[in-house]
Amino acid sequence: MAREAVEKAQRSRHPIDFSIGEYAVVLDAYATADMLQNLVFMGLSATAVQEERSFMNGQFGKQLVSPLVTIIDDGHNPAGLPQAFDYEGVPKQRVVMFDHGIASAVVYDSFTAFREGKPNTGHALPAPNPWGPLPLHTMMAAGDASLEELIRGVDRGIYVTRFHYTNTVHPVKTLFTGMTRDGTFLIEHGELTSPVKNFRFTQSILDALRDVQAIGSERIQCRDYVPVVAPALRISSFQFTGVTGA
Image 1 (cartoon, one colour):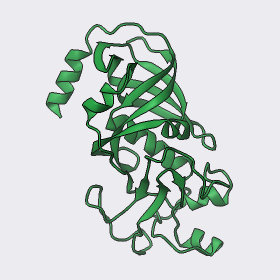
Image 2 (cartoon, rainbow, N blue to C red; image 1 turned 30 degrees about the horizontal axis):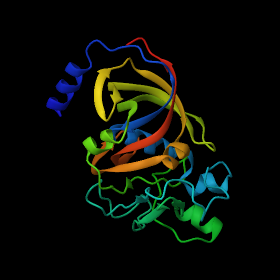
Image 3 (spheres, rainbow, N blue to C red; image 1 turned 30 degrees about the vertical axis):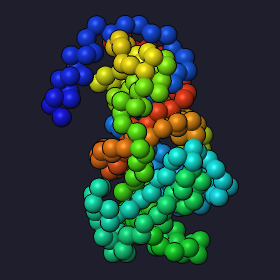
Protein backbone atom coordinates (compact mmCIF):
# COMPACT_ATOMS: atom_id res chain seq x y z
CA MET A 1 0.00 0.00 0.00
CA ALA A 2 2.81 2.38 0.82
CA ARG A 3 4.59 1.65 -2.48
CA GLU A 4 1.36 2.17 -4.40
CA ALA A 5 0.69 5.49 -2.66
CA VAL A 6 4.25 6.76 -3.26
CA GLU A 7 4.26 5.71 -6.91
CA LYS A 8 0.90 7.39 -7.56
CA ALA A 9 2.03 10.56 -5.75
CA GLN A 10 5.27 10.76 -7.73
CA ARG A 11 3.51 10.12 -11.01
CA SER A 12 0.86 12.76 -10.22
CA ARG A 13 3.32 15.68 -10.09
CA HIS A 14 2.59 18.65 -12.37
CA PRO A 15 -0.90 17.69 -13.54
CA ILE A 16 -2.17 19.24 -16.75
CA ASP A 17 -5.53 20.85 -17.48
CA PHE A 18 -7.87 18.66 -19.49
CA SER A 19 -11.26 19.47 -20.97
CA ILE A 20 -14.43 18.27 -19.29
CA GLY A 21 -16.78 15.97 -21.21
CA GLU A 22 -17.60 12.30 -21.71
CA TYR A 23 -14.63 9.96 -21.88
CA ALA A 24 -13.87 6.29 -21.76
CA VAL A 25 -12.52 5.48 -18.30
CA VAL A 26 -10.67 2.83 -16.40
CA LEU A 27 -11.84 2.87 -12.80
CA ASP A 28 -9.43 1.28 -10.36
CA ALA A 29 -11.07 -1.03 -7.82
CA TYR A 30 -11.16 1.76 -5.21
CA ALA A 31 -13.36 3.91 -7.45
CA THR A 32 -15.56 0.93 -8.38
CA ALA A 33 -16.09 0.13 -4.69
CA ASP A 34 -17.16 3.71 -3.94
CA MET A 35 -19.65 3.57 -6.81
CA LEU A 36 -21.10 0.28 -5.53
CA GLN A 37 -21.41 1.65 -1.99
CA ASN A 38 -23.56 4.46 -3.35
CA LEU A 39 -25.67 1.97 -5.31
CA VAL A 40 -26.35 -0.01 -2.11
CA PHE A 41 -27.95 3.00 -0.43
CA MET A 42 -29.85 4.02 -3.55
CA GLY A 43 -32.17 1.06 -3.62
CA LEU A 44 -30.90 -2.47 -2.94
CA SER A 45 -33.03 -2.63 0.22
CA ALA A 46 -36.56 -4.08 0.31
CA THR A 47 -37.58 -0.98 2.29
CA ALA A 48 -36.66 1.28 -0.65
CA VAL A 49 -38.60 -0.95 -3.06
CA GLN A 50 -41.67 -1.10 -0.80
CA GLU A 51 -41.61 2.68 -0.42
CA GLU A 52 -41.26 2.99 -4.24
CA ARG A 53 -38.07 5.01 -4.11
CA SER A 54 -35.69 2.39 -5.51
CA PHE A 55 -34.21 2.19 -9.01
CA MET A 56 -35.24 -1.49 -8.88
CA ASN A 57 -38.99 -0.71 -8.82
CA GLY A 58 -40.60 -2.25 -11.89
CA GLN A 59 -37.23 -3.47 -13.17
CA PHE A 60 -36.91 -7.00 -11.78
CA GLY A 61 -36.13 -9.47 -14.53
CA LYS A 62 -34.94 -6.76 -16.92
CA GLN A 63 -31.45 -6.30 -18.36
CA LEU A 64 -30.42 -3.11 -16.56
CA VAL A 65 -26.64 -3.24 -16.94
CA SER A 66 -23.96 -5.01 -18.96
CA PRO A 67 -24.15 -8.83 -19.09
CA LEU A 68 -20.58 -8.76 -17.76
CA VAL A 69 -21.85 -7.43 -14.42
CA THR A 70 -22.89 -9.76 -11.61
CA ILE A 71 -23.34 -8.27 -8.12
CA ILE A 72 -24.12 -10.41 -5.08
CA ASP A 73 -24.33 -10.10 -1.33
CA ASP A 74 -22.73 -13.04 0.47
CA GLY A 75 -22.08 -12.88 4.20
CA HIS A 76 -20.27 -16.23 4.15
CA ASN A 77 -17.67 -15.37 1.51
CA PRO A 78 -14.22 -14.93 3.10
CA ALA A 79 -13.31 -12.33 0.47
CA GLY A 80 -15.44 -9.88 2.45
CA LEU A 81 -16.10 -9.61 6.18
CA PRO A 82 -17.95 -12.86 6.92
CA GLN A 83 -20.93 -12.70 9.27
CA ALA A 84 -23.10 -15.78 9.73
CA PHE A 85 -26.18 -14.02 11.17
CA ASP A 86 -27.83 -10.63 10.91
CA TYR A 87 -28.75 -8.40 13.88
CA GLU A 88 -32.01 -10.28 14.41
CA GLY A 89 -30.16 -13.59 14.65
CA VAL A 90 -31.34 -14.75 11.21
CA PRO A 91 -28.82 -16.70 9.09
CA LYS A 92 -27.37 -14.70 6.21
CA GLN A 93 -28.49 -15.79 2.74
CA ARG A 94 -26.53 -15.34 -0.49
CA VAL A 95 -28.50 -12.89 -2.64
CA VAL A 96 -27.79 -12.33 -6.35
CA MET A 97 -28.85 -8.72 -6.92
CA PHE A 98 -27.68 -8.47 -10.54
CA ASP A 99 -27.26 -11.71 -12.48
CA HIS A 100 -25.23 -11.08 -15.66
CA GLY A 101 -26.78 -7.63 -15.82
CA ILE A 102 -30.36 -8.65 -15.02
CA ALA A 103 -32.01 -7.02 -12.00
CA SER A 104 -32.76 -10.01 -9.79
CA ALA A 105 -33.31 -9.24 -6.10
CA VAL A 106 -32.96 -6.96 -3.10
CA VAL A 107 -32.34 -7.92 0.53
CA TYR A 108 -34.91 -8.41 3.32
CA ASP A 109 -35.19 -8.40 7.10
CA SER A 110 -38.07 -9.88 9.12
CA PHE A 111 -40.29 -6.77 8.87
CA THR A 112 -39.98 -6.25 5.12
CA ALA A 113 -40.23 -9.98 4.42
CA PHE A 114 -43.48 -10.26 6.43
CA ARG A 115 -44.92 -7.15 4.79
CA GLU A 116 -44.35 -8.59 1.30
CA GLY A 117 -44.69 -12.30 1.99
CA LYS A 118 -41.10 -12.94 0.88
CA PRO A 119 -38.34 -15.02 2.50
CA ASN A 120 -36.17 -13.23 5.06
CA THR A 121 -32.64 -13.04 3.60
CA GLY A 122 -30.99 -12.18 6.92
CA HIS A 123 -30.04 -8.56 6.32
CA ALA A 124 -31.41 -6.74 9.36
CA LEU A 125 -29.43 -3.89 10.90
CA PRO A 126 -29.34 -3.05 14.63
CA ALA A 127 -32.50 -1.36 15.92
CA PRO A 128 -33.53 1.43 15.76
CA ASN A 129 -32.96 1.31 12.03
CA PRO A 130 -34.31 3.89 9.55
CA TRP A 131 -32.59 2.24 6.57
CA GLY A 132 -34.31 -1.12 6.62
CA PRO A 133 -32.28 -4.14 5.51
CA LEU A 134 -28.98 -3.48 3.73
CA PRO A 135 -26.48 -5.65 1.85
CA LEU A 136 -23.38 -5.47 4.02
CA HIS A 137 -21.32 -7.94 1.96
CA THR A 138 -21.67 -6.59 -1.57
CA MET A 139 -19.34 -8.14 -4.15
CA MET A 140 -18.97 -7.69 -7.88
CA ALA A 141 -17.81 -10.78 -9.76
CA ALA A 142 -14.30 -10.53 -11.18
CA GLY A 143 -13.55 -10.60 -14.89
CA ASP A 144 -10.52 -11.92 -16.74
CA ALA A 145 -8.50 -8.79 -17.56
CA SER A 146 -5.43 -7.43 -15.84
CA LEU A 147 -5.32 -3.73 -15.04
CA GLU A 148 -2.81 -3.28 -17.86
CA GLU A 149 -5.20 -4.96 -20.31
CA LEU A 150 -8.04 -2.69 -19.20
CA ILE A 151 -5.86 0.35 -19.92
CA ARG A 152 -4.66 -1.04 -23.27
CA GLY A 153 -8.26 -1.18 -24.44
CA VAL A 154 -8.65 2.63 -24.28
CA ASP A 155 -7.41 4.78 -27.16
CA ARG A 156 -8.11 8.07 -25.40
CA GLY A 157 -9.64 8.37 -21.98
CA ILE A 158 -9.12 8.83 -18.25
CA TYR A 159 -7.76 6.54 -15.54
CA VAL A 160 -9.29 7.14 -12.10
CA THR A 161 -7.69 5.73 -8.96
CA ARG A 162 -10.30 6.81 -6.45
CA PHE A 163 -13.41 8.92 -5.95
CA HIS A 164 -13.75 11.47 -3.17
CA TYR A 165 -16.70 13.08 -1.37
CA THR A 166 -19.35 11.25 -3.38
CA ASN A 167 -23.02 12.07 -2.75
CA THR A 168 -26.37 10.96 -4.13
CA VAL A 169 -28.10 13.38 -6.52
CA HIS A 170 -31.13 11.27 -7.61
CA PRO A 171 -31.47 7.73 -6.22
CA VAL A 172 -34.07 6.49 -8.73
CA LYS A 173 -31.87 7.64 -11.62
CA THR A 174 -28.80 6.42 -9.67
CA LEU A 175 -27.13 9.79 -10.20
CA PHE A 176 -24.18 10.50 -7.95
CA THR A 177 -21.56 13.21 -7.91
CA GLY A 178 -18.08 13.62 -6.51
CA MET A 179 -14.45 14.20 -7.43
CA THR A 180 -11.50 12.12 -8.52
CA ARG A 181 -8.42 11.91 -6.31
CA ASP A 182 -5.15 10.11 -5.52
CA GLY A 183 -4.06 9.69 -9.13
CA THR A 184 -5.99 10.74 -12.23
CA PHE A 185 -4.23 10.20 -15.55
CA LEU A 186 -4.74 10.61 -19.26
CA ILE A 187 -4.82 7.38 -21.26
CA GLU A 188 -3.50 7.69 -24.82
CA HIS A 189 -3.24 4.79 -27.24
CA GLY A 190 -3.54 2.25 -24.44
CA GLU A 191 -0.95 3.78 -22.11
CA LEU A 192 -1.00 6.06 -19.06
CA THR A 193 0.60 9.36 -20.01
CA SER A 194 0.15 12.73 -18.29
CA PRO A 195 -1.37 13.28 -14.86
CA VAL A 196 -4.44 15.50 -15.13
CA LYS A 197 -6.09 17.82 -12.65
CA ASN A 198 -8.87 16.18 -10.71
CA PHE A 199 -12.36 16.23 -12.15
CA ARG A 200 -15.80 16.68 -10.70
CA PHE A 201 -18.33 14.27 -12.16
CA THR A 202 -22.07 13.68 -12.20
CA GLN A 203 -22.94 10.24 -13.47
CA SER A 204 -25.69 7.63 -13.44
CA ILE A 205 -24.27 4.47 -11.87
CA LEU A 206 -26.59 2.23 -13.89
CA ASP A 207 -25.49 3.96 -17.09
CA ALA A 208 -21.85 3.42 -16.13
CA LEU A 209 -22.47 -0.26 -15.38
CA ARG A 210 -24.42 -0.57 -18.65
CA ASP A 211 -21.32 0.66 -20.50
CA VAL A 212 -18.86 -1.76 -18.86
CA GLN A 213 -16.60 -3.23 -21.54
CA ALA A 214 -14.24 -5.31 -19.41
CA ILE A 215 -13.71 -6.24 -15.75
CA GLY A 216 -10.49 -6.77 -13.85
CA SER A 217 -9.45 -10.19 -12.59
CA GLU A 218 -8.29 -8.94 -9.19
CA ARG A 219 -10.59 -7.57 -6.49
CA ILE A 220 -9.99 -5.63 -3.29
CA GLN A 221 -12.06 -5.15 -0.16
CA CYS A 222 -12.94 -1.54 0.63
CA ARG A 223 -14.58 -0.41 3.86
CA ASP A 224 -16.19 2.99 4.16
CA TYR A 225 -19.93 3.07 4.83
CA VAL A 226 -20.41 -0.61 4.01
CA PRO A 227 -17.79 -3.23 3.04
CA VAL A 228 -17.56 -3.86 -0.71
CA VAL A 229 -15.39 -6.26 -2.72
CA ALA A 230 -14.77 -4.78 -6.17
CA PRO A 231 -12.63 -5.15 -9.32
CA ALA A 232 -11.37 -2.49 -11.71
CA LEU A 233 -13.61 -1.63 -14.68
CA ARG A 234 -13.26 -0.33 -18.22
CA ILE A 235 -16.30 1.80 -19.09
CA SER A 236 -16.94 3.28 -22.53
CA SER A 237 -18.47 6.56 -21.33
CA PHE A 238 -18.27 8.57 -18.10
CA GLN A 239 -19.43 12.16 -17.61
CA PHE A 240 -16.93 14.69 -16.18
CA THR A 241 -18.62 18.01 -15.47
CA GLY A 242 -15.94 20.17 -13.88
CA VAL A 243 -12.27 20.53 -12.99
CA THR A 244 -10.87 21.09 -9.50
CA GLY A 245 -7.91 23.31 -8.73
CA ALA A 246 -5.36 20.52 -8.39
